[in-house]
Length: 139
Image 1: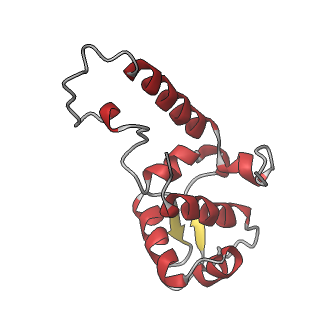
Image 2: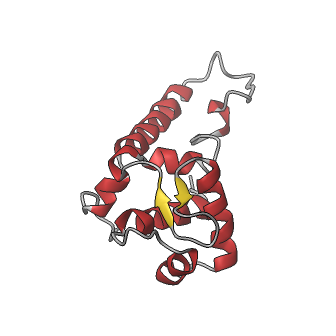
């Protein structure tokens, strides 16, 4: 299983915004420079984060970005959900997927439990956890 670049960069961008203490918000160009993300690609990420209601411009266009909630209230699942419809480790767990083996499959429960563990982990980690180093960022 692999998470999208947008999700990974989205987490990095949100972390930049969460760590800012300037009261003027973080400019997109600064996020791009600090995180080594192209401004053009970051524009797509910022758009998705704004559409998800996770960030806003502090004073309208051409101003810095701030979080819409406290870092302790924003989970990694919230950020992931800005880019992906859900977490699904294998296709057969998707609600729209129909499998002829569903009633006899002996491993679907295994995959379902793994999927639940990942979702629970994403729900249990907040931006504040990352900001305060509660999760090792060097792995």
